[in-house]
Image (tube, rainbow, N blue to C red; front, top):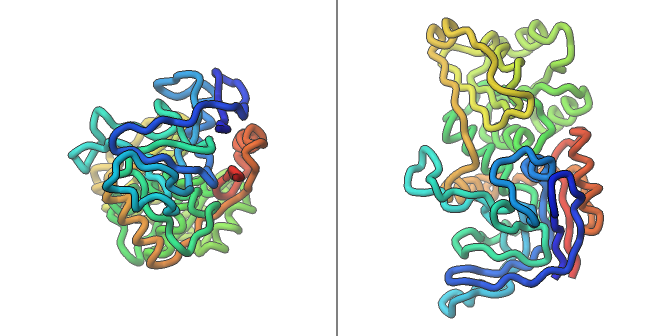
Length: 333
């Protein structure tokens, strides 16, 4: 079968012929129709991710059809269109992942292949209103955003939310989830075009963080936030404390701009703030996200679609960080 194989750090993704996976007890083989990139794939290629191993087939997100099932009791899954939950072995504690937790695409081969094997518990029927490309786009980023907003931040209707760095996958899903939950959503970006696109998706407004009047503009725009969702961190995180209401919740799940800077502890305790980290999500949260999506028929934002032969070109698009929404690759029969 065809698979996109990464042979080492900063090596290109190469389409190679590899053996089709052999199933073990409780596993299914999914014939992939479409798969989506995440920033995680980029960091693995750059050698800036924990637990590197090569060769590896990347890819955490995928949509396809169940081609084989290991046991007789579940043969009814064959032929079903499914999406894959890439959050494996969460564990028994809903507040944090267990020691056996892992994400599809490292250490196990992922969805950038004609076929991928996963535990049956990780597959869910594809929402009927989504096409293959849309269905491939949401699992990892959508789940991360869902947990950040609803489990961690406990978002309520009509609260003011700030999505920092809109345009990336998780931030874009956080925007969609918050809008459909009835929140008043604002965004930041280094691109006026991305801010305009976010407003087109339901944001009330946005501020360019490159502007010298950023703080004043943000204050004038919303006059305080109940929830801030940030995937960049870095020095800019300290500014958030100037733009939150008492009792605000600040949730982060990445650090692409660096570590947490020194923070004014007096603001944190006086305003009774909560600063929380999060990663991925539980099986229950994945199911809840699917129900939320289906109820509102929310469609993921897809920036670009490439055939699998052009996967390295798709990866290089992530270098530029110009995309708004997800980058998807397709596998033809």
